Length: 603
Image 1 (tube, rainbow, N blue to C red):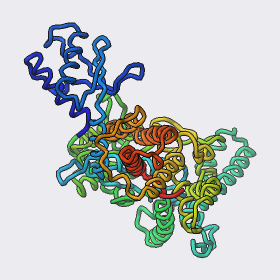
Image 2: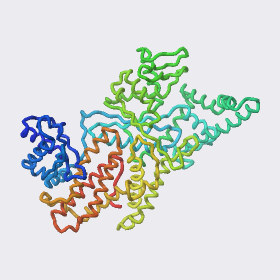
Image 3: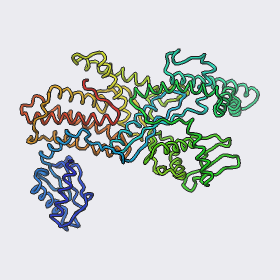
């Protein structure tokens, strides 16, 4: 049992015995004692003054004395500062808690059951015209970690992906491959399929820009001003007209276009899957916009019949959200084609058919904040019971020291290259440490480099509050000191080394040990893990877990610096410290695991 829970129960008893009145548990406000004062936990006594009818200091004094007299195994001593009762928790209580932590393999986690709420989390959402880049990496890591955190808070979780596999941008890659591809395939080039298709998306843009330049110059020479010439060039561009014609053929189910579309998309999916495996993320269900946009059009037609939406004279369909303080939103163009909002409505319909969703969370960048504000209102109007309460897990952009990324110009930070670079940097950085390990094979050294490199990447991204824009610095992320993944991983590996050398010495009875201030601080930090998990779930903020793991690792390293463990002569104290090591390692492993970060046994 957590010490706070035990204390709450005895304080409720104390209030009843002292003042003859029962109080609810929520009135018992416990805080971590401020460092300026002696104590571990502090009770705020102001809520009890109407019951005690005494001064704050006197009320705190009476409650403190009752606790020391009646539960000395919980409260060893106390001091009063105005209306605050600072309590020193007895060593026996901390040791009992340490024993509980050791025995609970899921410490800090709340397990789901068949009746638990079902939370669906959408993340990744790639386009099939280019490979995944650094922005996708942040999205995937956040989505996966959020899914783990929500599950750790007792929810059933479905991880889902919506793939943008249709539209003019897809046709651009297809057309470029037909024109300049000479039948290239991933097999013939040795390239991943997503990279191959991405190259043709960049190639289309390059040829298109050259075409626009030539047309604009031609129209200017004919006497048009520059702005009008550019506008006409964009309208009359043969390349763009071909791409639009291909999209129309796709919409009409032209067998030749559809066959090429499927072939090239399959190349991309194989490439995506390879990247997802390398990142250690996955999905329970994948939806495709080519399948959902028609469902969305059906729901819009249904909304028209019910008077939720309206049709303008040009045939386009709109939602009037002015009463909600927003504007009017286009749902179907005048030619009947859908927009992103329509597709999202269709995807929601399919998901609701597939799963009894209690809460829907979309992991999408903050440039889409307005989109999801509108989507929530529209889904609610259309009768989706979770629509009103959908969560847009809005995150900031990832920026680089040399500026923002641009897909069309081919200047993105490619996810596969980034992963490979992080692993190589980890191999170089950890070479001296790994070389000190005895009997290490090349395979194990490579595996350690993979774990550390990916851990550095994931932790650097996830330790930042998702709502903030962030600057990604690969060199800073791979450092073995400071608030980094490798620092925490190295702490874990150090503890595992200690435990291997100890060979079961942690099994001795530890009930009678006297504890130092640092040992109590470490147990108190371990006890706080459950609160961190709950906060991360309540706030949808996985950085809480990342920074908790860092604080725990830092606290352990301070303890490790000041105290002997294996060389401690007192067997009971040695056993207690080994148990402490065991619990710290377990909580680091669980906490980092929630973030999708592995921890190496040796390093």
